[in-house]
Amino acid sequence: MSMKEDIYYLRLANEAAIEAKNSGNTPFGAILVSSDGEVLLTQGNIEITEHDCTGHAESTLMRRASKKYPKEFLWDCTLYTTFEPCAMCCGAIYWGNVGRVVYGTTEKRLLELTGDDEQNPTFDLPCRDIFSKGQKEIDVVGPFPEFEKESVEPHIGFWNKSC
Image 1 (cartoon, rainbow, N blue to C red):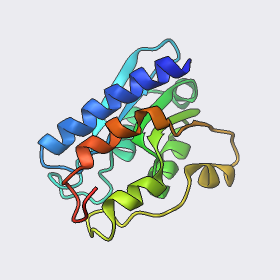
Image 2: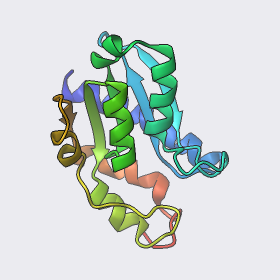
Image 3: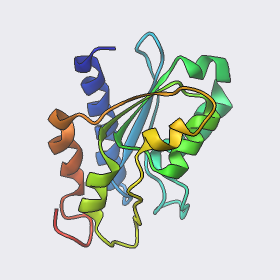
Image 4: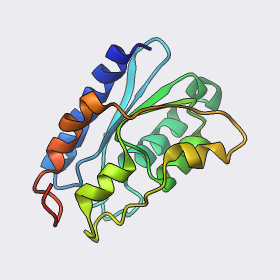
């Protein structure tokens, strides 16, 4: 995929983040895209409304995807996410067998946004570091500085710290 296509899909993931926020959840979104560019699944965070601490967009999307598609198919798919996946979500992506991850903004930047907000005790742990410890090579693309303003927008005023 080209950078232009990646940003297009990141914007779709950001729409899911905005929808999650409007539903009372934390503002994160993810989508799963097939190798031919079809959006297969869209997911926002559900952790607040579902009372599920594992209800991150990426991990929830992977639970859904693993029930719907075989691992061989998922390897050729791309998971787009507004922010770099956390350690938990990296595990779900890894075990779900998605072969490519594209994220808009870093986990480090997220930590700057959320501060010490107890809703999101963020790790400063790059997903590339996590995936590099595994037995398969997951292609990771990101961050996209040209997308950061858009990905940050739903977070403004959400966390206990000013953005």
